[in-house]
Length: 166
Image (cartoon, rainbow, N blue to C red):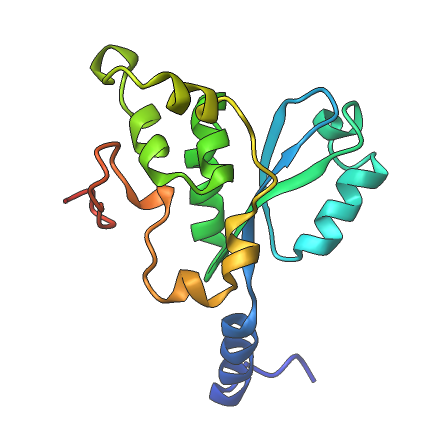
């Protein structure tokens, strides 16, 4: 006898399993001060792999690494999209995200010639990384309550829906 075709019950089991999974986009600070951005379905395991070395050439040459930011997301596609959005960001914009400073994330989202001048204290703060990891401190529920994150802004502090409309 060959393999039986999946039943509706099989699909329901897989759907429940899939819905209970969490996916993560995360950022690491490497020993040389550079940032690494990635996504995973098991944050603790993936951080341990980065610490051990051999799983990622970039972080293997820059150990030890420190988790500085993470955000849980509902699907792997959302986690990958968030990773792809964050990777090309400037160092200043990534550090604003790490601090949870959404105003500065919006500021650095604008082209340099369109940014207003910052007061000296704001410039200093923008260049000082913080150990604050917003998604861990706020808890997993924050993302599910529609809390705005830097990934939701268009650079002017306005929320953007999935289609890019304000």
